[in-house]
Length: 393
Ligand code: PHB
Image 1 (cartoon, helix red, strand yellow):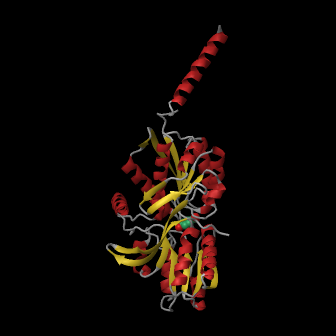
Image 2 (image 1 turned 90 degrees about the vertical axis):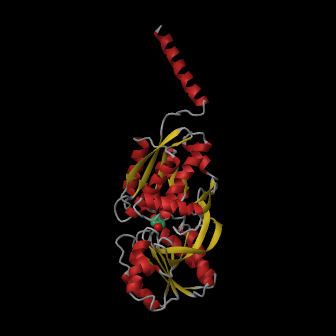
Image 3 (image 1 turned 180 degrees about the vertical axis):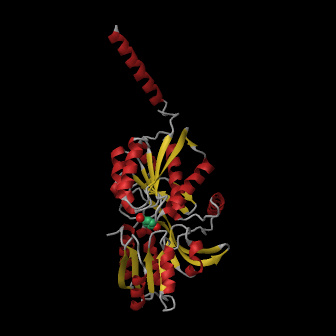
């Protein structure tokens, strides 16, 4: 009797499971949880602030439900400096909160730390910010919606070589993305006939830029090429001006991280005339971007969106597009497959997730800092379209 009852129960349970699986929406009512890990405090808090604002704007504009599933964001502050902290947060989000997607990742060492967690849990990990080329190779579950330093540096090296810059000192932050930028600049600029006078690296933590810039002044190159992560650019610009490098006839060229739109209002006229290369400028003249900048600025007390905001806004777009494709199925491997090969018209221009590398293919722009309405902006004047991460040897 008891045996029969158990058997019947088991049949009912199996029947219910099959019925819901057959509907293609195994858990139609369950929310999809996204663990968003970014620095909301510490030296890189501007990245977290930008990402958080962009995700909120996306949800406000597109609704918090997609393909019948509610999307819940669980925002976690990792402080931006400790890989162990980021890894522990990722583990807790997966094990305790049962998130089906991880997203954010302000800096390369933090993305590296979370990668094995994504692999083990089979959870897609949308890297919105960190930009060292090798990151997607650290987990088959990583998809990147930001950019790579190699991708934005190569066009800068070409531009410099073609524009009467014959000798350069490179100066980068001494970690993943900085080393990528240095290697690509040195390789491409040298190949195009330019001369590298010196390659300098400053520590990521507590940098004092002045002794480095004193060395650059003595070396007298035609130009100084700089990469520092977003948030640090104002200090470099100030030292460049204070030490009289511009008066000594040394041009400043940089990746757009140095003239990050979040900082542009505080950098102000010190940026005027600086040529940089990047995938996003708040001054990008498309109607889509104008609407984005207006909505973002309005919702955030006048804050300008920067490239991290766009990496996050597009990361949300990618998640929504993939969920539409799977009819709301958030099983990790399926969701990941649905992300590969997605193309859309971003506020930065057209983008594609390369299905082979899970990295973003996009336009890289050459820009010049100019006075505009409401401050100094990076005005785009040249571009390389459909540009893939060239990788770093
Ligand atoms: C990184 O750590 O990968 C990173 C952070 C900030 C940037 C660029 C790269 O602006």
